Length: 243
Image 1 (cartoon, one colour):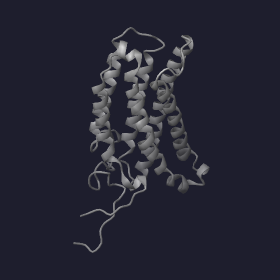
Image 2: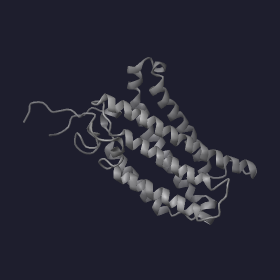
Image 3: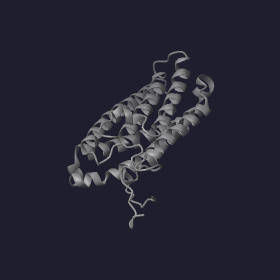
Image 4: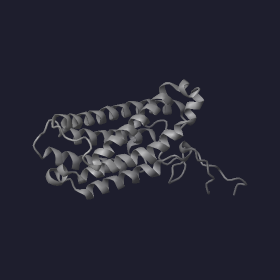
């Protein structure tokens, strides 16, 4: 047995051994979607989107409502894909990590545009129908989540595209851990709570009838897929590991 204990590396995920859920240099980026436990997240995303889309498209098409749940669920799926793509990258392969960051920014940009389009649709619905903007918990959480996502996206883009705003590239890289912490601890839970709150809206109770158990199961699977792949060093942890 060696005299010293090896330290955790960035390639070691929250659960597992070094190298688990870490992209190899010869692996395509799409493999990151199902690498390690990522498959569970994909299954959860498909379940969630299928339930929302089937329940919505089974009803009469309403131009100022139907696109809202379709776009919002699509935005959630796209954003999770953006996370899955980036999670397995490691600073040990600088070029691949840089490519992954660009891909992450592009995917998250698409998710943001899709999300805002869904917000615009429901706002147009409220304005045209002269309905109150804050009628339910879902409405309050939706607005709060939109603001949080906008802040997270702005912070991420500034770190990536304008590192000088943080005093240079090194300082910008040092702040990435806060971006990741905020995503896992604030953004993801807010999205989950907002989606769950939609189950209690009058339109779902009386018209859509989306099934709660599918929502809960899909989110459990999503977390099961994401959490074990979190790289500890990316969150600022450096702890000893056993042999």
